[in-house]
Length: 290
Image (cartoon, rainbow, N blue to C red; front, side, top):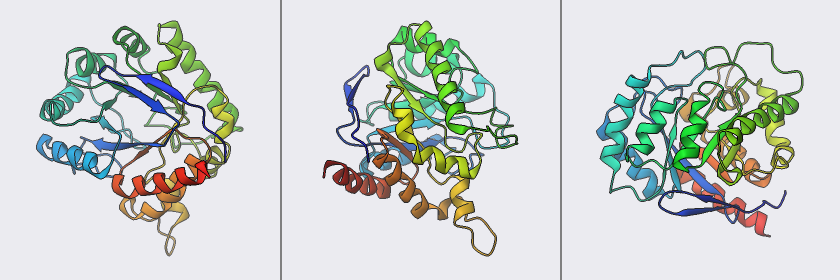
């Protein structure tokens, strides 16, 4: 266990303190093909209901993604992404009290979701600014926090070998490069969050190594977000009769990795099963305080 450093994020509507307790970020995929719940919340009305339910279940923030980044996916246009995203944001405006993060790799989508007053207050870029460096300029100009994630390759190629020979060096180097892009664009250091990208271009064994060695990434000096929820390495670990568990059956494996992430220094955990993982976070935080 390590003692987490305290950070403060400045959102448009409030400030968020990171480190006093674990913050739970609920995942809302408004896509037809995400690996875990693709199609379930594709209709805007269903997505709005799901978002409000996550808030009631105890989520501290909501991360909405309108483009699937599952292994093998090829992406969509910015226009299509906005067509999926904006009706949901309009439906939540004035109703959802927790802050909204937008999971996007496109500056134009970020601009519309935040700059056009659609209600989002935070950005989450799985490419770590490699896909569209102008996303950093949007974050800097609008003054919003941004999550920079490490991904080896692209969603289409990330689960194809070769893996990094040293995953910790690979992730640390990649995250430093993303931070450099952000800082050069004018993003304040205090507005940057790092995500090691569990499951994004790593072998199953490397995902566990990242969790075990998370304190090394904390030494980069930024708050950490970790997302292990329902991911494939858990399905493989918990396989029955040689068959990986389906995404919806991986809740207990997810719980174990959420607890481990918190004990190793994660400030935010990104999850699908909000009610259950809020319980995990509360109990694990008590261990940290003890």
